[in-house]
Image (tube, rainbow, N blue to C red):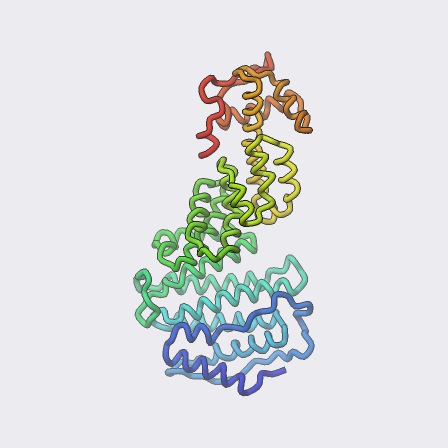
Length: 408
């Protein structure tokens, strides 16, 4: 299978016209690929595919663009043949060539094209790895990381000073392209579970204020990924701030993106004692959080535990299961508060508390009750002390269940 001559001429002409005019968005359009298939049953050795290295020659304004044109044609051919592996191989060659072109050019007029190529390299690599049928095969995505890291270095190390909202031109700073590439790398690092590499991006970007000089979409995406990093490092206050920023500035029509942010913001807020409204849960079809929030609100430990078990696989995939499990302490706290209101005094026998667990269908012994209460007192969710000898919880007369400690 080969590309027809008129098709090759069309691609070639578009690239010539765009580069000659130094039109940033026209160049980006010229190196764009057709939509990649989401899944191909047989990605390698596809019938009818002929691996062809195109040998077109192309010089524009004295510069050789053949090494951009030929892999671009190879990628088009591979896509038409439904071959994801060869698509990635051609796309990676194209990416390498554009990195070289960016490094040897002045100004930032190639940045939109670089962004297109970074996105396509990321997507082609992920799909090619999936198409092999081996879940542990990430060879192409790991190779793609190297290409994007090279793009990151070439943009970050540009000596031209970055001016916010500057247009693409032959005088502009290539640093304007950094934040988009960082977001792509974040996504790839999360996919590969190499989160330690994310820290290598944070300090250079934030020390130069680049994270505050991108487009709104780029800044929202950046805050989303940094929030997830904060969450995995148990920095829940920072995680909440970053997720709040991302949600507040996310485009009003980007419902899927808002839901993606809330998948992490809701668990962080639950841990910090802020329960979602039923309106929010209904609006975004968050069935997985209904039992958890209801259980925490009423101290119904059984409802909370059932909800956690029911959606356990979903929470594990998102990486929020352990965080949500920590919310059980607030559920305990609210259960004991209800017992306190029923008893009506500051001294509560431990067997009364144990009885509340039995009512919920989760019987435990007094030693377990003491252990739970000791943890709650240590975390300052409850003010008081335990009398082991008398098997009594003695609560403070002043605000025994401080709200300010839970809702931080």
